[in-house]
Amino acid sequence: MTTEETTTVRARPEPIKAVPVRHPGRWAAIAVLAVLAAMFVHLLVTNDKFKWSFMVDNMFRPPIIEGLLRGTVVMTICAMVLGVSLGIVVAIMRLSTNPILRVVAWLYTWVFRAVPRLVLLAVFGNLGILWSRIEFGVPFDTQIGQLFGIDNLQLRVFGFTSRDVLTGFVAGLLGLALSEAGYMAEIVRAGIQSVDEGQSEAASALGMSRGQILRRIVLPQAMRVIIPPTGNETIAMLKDTSLLLAVPYSVELFFQLDAVGKRTFQIFPMYVAAVLWYLFLTSILLIGQYFLERHFGKGYGTSGRARMRLRGMTAEAGGNAGVVDPS
Image 1 (cartoon, rainbow, N blue to C red):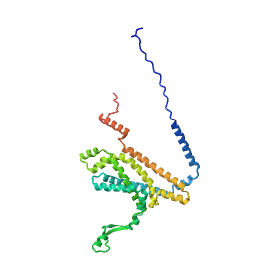
Image 2 (tube, rainbow, N blue to C red):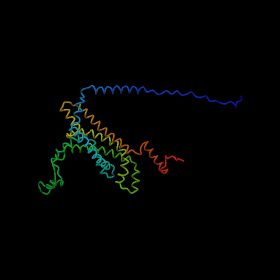
Image 3 (cartoon, rainbow, N blue to C red):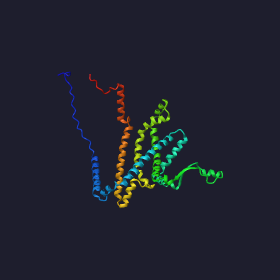
Image 4 (cartoon, rainbow, N blue to C red):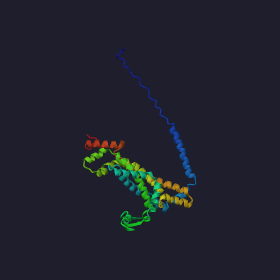
């Protein structure tokens, strides 16, 4: 047999023996978590200090439901609407070319972010100490009259007592909303600055005004950055309504649950009821935040970019991309 007639046969490699990677730490963690979960369930079932029947009978009573709706839900909505609206204004002032507006906006955020909300609510709850009446008219009318020799000059149009205006709800709303505006101003400012300046320059070249650019170009794109921290602020506001007892404002969820617990000497079950109510409300807010983030996040991320490329391919193909020719 000649060399030319000899065929070289390559040896077939042996099959790879793949050994799965073992993760003993995972199984140990699962075992520890399972034991802890079982201990927690055992605590809930066997410890009679929870008094589940008493809790369920009292956590749905009319005063508590009224506190849930008026003191927690309505206060959260109103405070966030005012806080977000004022925060947008303050953020625009911070980004303004006017140095006076920038300084005023910085001072506002400095003050209302520095003071704790509990202290702020206590201050707003006692504003009636400064003014027994709130009146509208010519400012410094008494001092102007003294300059011209007129005693007790009164140039007030109308007025009312501070108790009629600074109710518990109004004082709590002002404290929460003004504090929230300081935080929302920074969130909105960061969202606006995240938008490429070329977007504004292109819109300005098309003849759009600064207000139109902000409403139609900048803010819609900034919402992707603004929504997640705003959702966190809304959840924090929901929980901070429990601080309204510093005003004081009695038509509030935690205040009512705490009152039932102290009246019946069953404080801990009512505190657990408060935990359950806040978990329920926060879960609803988390669901809403998820859908808002998905709505304003269209076109971003891996799936968003893939959808945009697919739409571009469809437009280039005349709307027939992805359609198989039957011929």
